Length: 229
Ligand SMILES: Nc1ncnc2c1ncn2[C@@H]1O[C@H](COP(=O)(O)OP(=O)(O)OP(=O)(O)O)[C@@H](O)[C@H]1O
Ligand SMILES: [Mg+2]
Image (cartoon, rainbow, N blue to C red; front, side, top):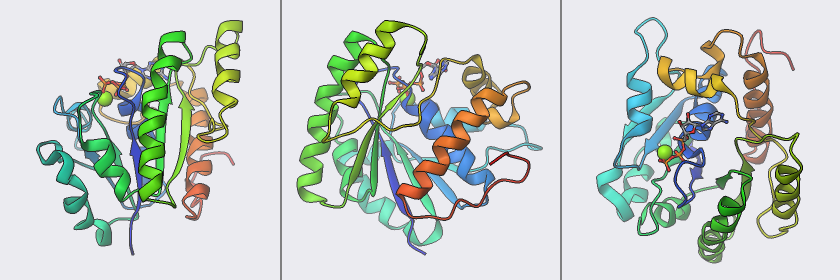
């Protein structure tokens, strides 16, 4: 097997890169895929998140830091491609980091999480530019903006989502994540929302997004038992 590779990045801090990467990696792991999550953030948030899991309920994907490798990380990731079905790369929130460009050299899909707030939508432009530059080299790289922490009942959020949806070069993914405490609880428990009590709405969101991402990667859905279709 040769792993499909997904890069999650946005130079803007706190937009949900780690939450999105951990959610997708965990959901795919629970479906039986062999998943590696590469943490490129020197803060090591993803590694710490997974380290918080109990022995009885380990995080359902391997998580490792390659942050010191910076712009050479793609060479190391290539060494792991035969051992995994999917490799997801969580990038740091830095304008100067070489990680996103390096990761996009070997990626099938780039995801740019964006919070529908004016500053975040504005800041997403530089992430989009970097993606377009990567697509000039890696012509098969697909790219989507993913709306996170969506409060869809507000008209401002809806207006900003419409702006993001207008971009035909890097479209808005149809699946979004709402603001839900379950995502924070999952981080505390070292797990995914699947292990958080009374988190069905968050689970449904993550599962629907996982279906779509697997389709984009041309992988089978492999539905998890007990998760409604
Ligand atoms: N959909 C959500 N609902 C509720 N809280 C969320 C959601 N997404 C992210 N958060 C919270 O927002 C904060 C930032 O999220 P996260 O760490 O995933 O962002 P990040 O882009 O990886 O940040 P950094 O730029 O520092 O790496 C965290 O406390 C996280 O729990
Ligand atoms: Mg992060």
